[in-house]
Length: 285
Ligand SMILES: Cc1cc2nc3c(=O)[nH]c(=O)nc-3n(C[C@H](O)[C@H](O)[C@H](O)COP(=O)(O)OP(=O)(O)OC[C@H]3O[C@@H](n4cnc5c(N)ncnc54)[C@H](O)[C@@H]3O)c2cc1C
Image 1 (cartoon, protein in one colour):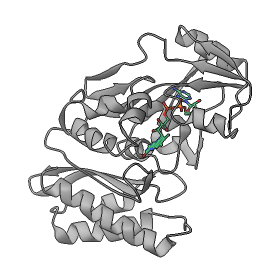
Image 2 (cartoon, rainbow, N blue to C red):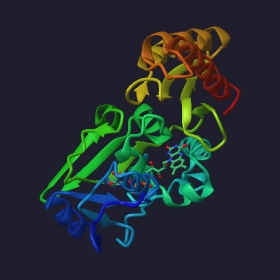
Image 3 (tube, rainbow, N blue to C red):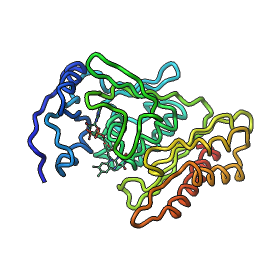
Image 4 (cartoon, helix red, strand yellow):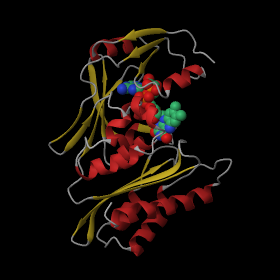
């Protein structure tokens, strides 16, 4: 199908973009890798597209003062490079390689993925688990929302229609933090059926901090806080990993049955993927 008729604005500044969003009926065009599809299926019928691709400076990707700042035009592909230092860079590189395939990663953006909130998208769960904070800007208004609060259901967030996602900030992981990422998908380029991201910091041989994110394991991205608590203060050994995996599957996850995977299968898969992600972290990931 073809999209319903729409107006098009190539915004030249963030101010021009948010002014256009304030008029109502408008949608931001970032990478277009989800929105154009939605428009072609006529599930999205914006009256006006506000293209932000020509706005200078929105592609800022900067790691400084313990924080990674990501602008609205940072493409998935940027995270495949060495642009982000340390363990956070290692985790984001591993995750980015699981998103779709190279042409889509060259256009699609992290902030577009957060705004779209596809339940099987990787970034929402990763940003949630890492304690990300999202800046939302509208005409005369700016607010910051924790990623853990931002997602409210499949394709649903706290973003108001006139708000532009202006930046997401992630704390840089400390040197020595170990990371892992494991994903289950039906074909190479399809969305994740499930995935688990892990970042674990040891103090001596004990876990001092842990972040676990579950992709597509509930109606929204999950930070697996109960499983994280299991790990704190313990060596990252087989017993702790197995217990945390069981708790992630049994307490943190709330999977929705699918035609080809019932909830029992999905919970089992969450446990397997959590074990794999934590195993990678233990083994020096
Ligand atoms: C074949 C295929 C496979 C894919 N596989 C995966 C996958 O495995 N994992 C995955 O995570 N994704 C996957 N995607 C989706 C892809 O990652 C998209 O790039 C992403 O979901 C949206 O980013 P975008 O920049 O393209 O946003 P767009 O398509 O431009 O926009 C998506 C939505 O977000 C809004 N939006 C975008 N940016 C902003 C902003 N800054 N402020 C406010 N609203 C904004 C738009 O208005 C629109 O509603 C796939 C897509 C395709 C076509």
